[in-house]
Structures are given as C-alpha cells and as structure tokens.
Amino acid sequence: MNDVEALDTRWLSLPEVADALDVRLRDVRTMLAERRLVAVRQGPNDAWSVPADLLTVGEGDAGRVLASLRGTLIQLGDAGLTDVECVIWLFSEDAELGERPIDALRSGRTHAVRRAAQPLAF
Image (cartoon, rainbow, N blue to C red; front, side):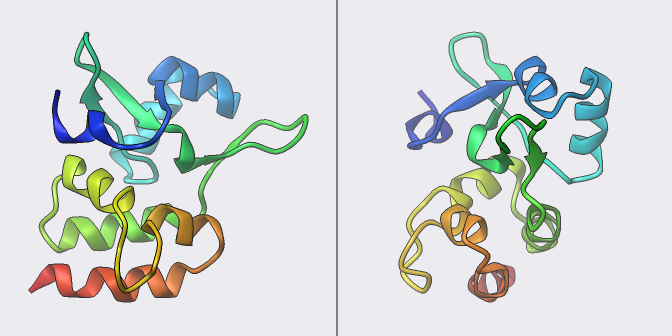
C-alpha cells in the first residue's frame, strides 16, 4: 500500500469522473493535462484515480471540478510537489488551517489554503 491509499477519501476511476461530470473521458484527460484536476495511480490495479472530494455534485445537475483546485494545484506544482505529494498534502491535516486543505477549499477558504502552501516552495 502506498501513502495515497492510506488517505481517508473515496476514489473514482477516470470513467467514473467522466460520468459524474457528464463529459467524455477525453475531456477528463484534458482536465488532468491542464491541471484542473489531479489523478494518481492507486488500488490493486494501479489505476488512475481521482479523489471524489475534488468534485462538487449538485442535486440533479452534473458535477463540477472544485473551482479553486486549479490554482492550488499550479501553486503546489510550482513548489516542486509531484501529483502524489499534492494529493497527500490536500488530504492531510494542516496545523495552520486546523483542517485538511481540501476541506478548507470546499468551504471557500482558498486564500488561507494558498497561504498555508507558500512555505512548501522553500
């Protein structure tokens, strides 16, 4: 088991993400390439998986990618974190935030999350 498999989150395969967002699979791959979404290999088949908390699901509507995610992923990538490290950071408790960064992003605390990420670049 790797570090991401130990995280407390539900995982979606890329086809499941496409279904949740009501888009084509190639659109999900484009989102990954554009850093609007992040996926890591995990599970028994070492398949590409996306944490479900990166999506918002409206009632009766297609889901959306968390709006504040792209800028945060770009900042973490610029700090030198790999995709696996980004996911681990997002889903691990942060002392400065008092919660997991993903929970802070979901509650609209984007600026606080990005401030907490700044020291990672040094």
